[in-house]
Length: 266
Image (cartoon, rainbow, N blue to C red; front, side, top):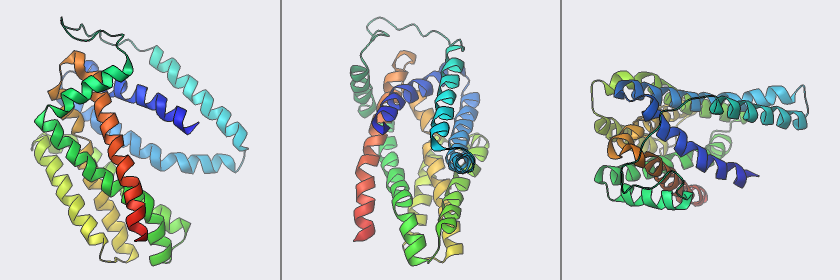
């Protein structure tokens, strides 16, 4: 079931992300949309477990799945009700009915042939390395090293999400003053510094602050990535390029998840 969810996510997410530049051609508006998208993602990550826990206290998990199904259906109806701009492909470009696998491979070829996107891939790997450490090892560090409980673990992850949301709110104004490249490199530097500090055995209050900074650094790197993809692709190649970004970034997570677990027990 998880595989099926991820399969449909791999089809929907790049298409959704590639459609935003067509709906919002103005770069300033597009930047605000990226920030709102990041903020929504973080809010969902923080609130959905809480909401699910509250619902499970009054209904069974069977009804929770029924409600989730109805939510997916409602989302599909909303998507179908939207009228989107039509992008006309230039001669020599792939047709709209191109197979998904070919579209991904075409996007990867464009991605790896573009210097700024190769740099984006390196930054994606840095973020996935830190993110995997946070997801895999936070519970171990909080409970074994700090002697905390489940509530303590929740507050540490909330600090990570709060840092990301704060950056999402401030990013449109920040990108109006400095370039996306400088913003993303600054985020990578912040991640490296915070990750090195986390290795020094911080106290609980220090851990909250470090995880807040880790979340902020991750958002500084990830959120402007859509701007680089938008600037690097012709309109008819956007879906392929965003699909390549989805595939390559998840490949980074595929490497860093087991690596974080192995290093955590080493």
